[in-house]
Image (cartoon, rainbow, N blue to C red; front, top):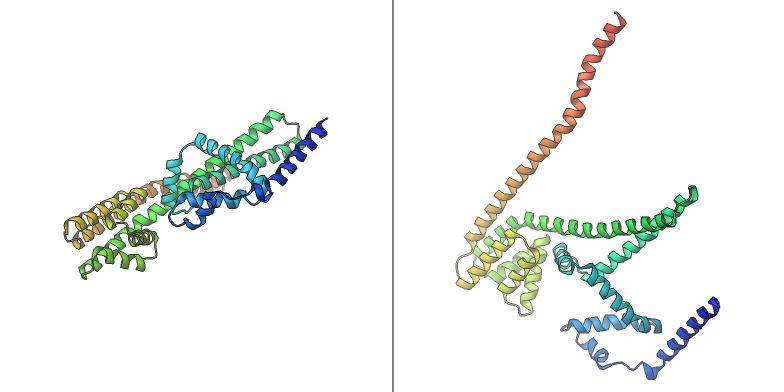
Length: 308
């Protein structure tokens, strides 16, 4: 009876796949026909082309694609944190979308769960393991893998933001030099973006690209500052936008901001050095000092006990 049910399900799916593959039933919709011509101006068109390329390759994809997409959307909504993930992806400089990151995260969690089952099976070969322990181990490993993926994203975002903060004084001084030479704000930013090879130069190249598409320079800079969420960079953008709107001199302001950024960086380095100095006392007190006392005292104790 069980094999008969399985054979019936397989036969039904095969017949449905054959019906869906018929040309009369696969006529493209108007949205699918127009989407390839609107890729540059419409996000919905890009999603339609991606969905068609993903689900249209097979009849089973066309059959199960909507249900899988709905299940994935519901799961991502249940997990939550889309805005936080989107902000960290932007700060990390990643081109992946939130859905792509969550899908990779869920896939890694599934692989972690499988690894947990494999470990439980290896343990069961040595000694009996309850089935509930198998499930618990797989769940714990999958949950840990999910958390590790999120932690790695946060770490990548923090590292990139730290590099941008380190590059800011140099970029600000280069902008001040270009402005002092008589260039306008847009030309100075374009020159510095072209000459810079760091992460902040990459962000400025994005600003220049947005301006080339017709976005006002002030709006492009403010969008960059809002997405990165760096206080020092936000002050820089406010100064540049204010100078653009009021026509005020900007070179001296940028030099002052670069000096302030260097002073703040120096203070942070001194604080880090102070914390490291305290940590360096741990091996000195608990390692080198007892060893030195032992080396100095042990020969005398040995001589006294031997009676020499």
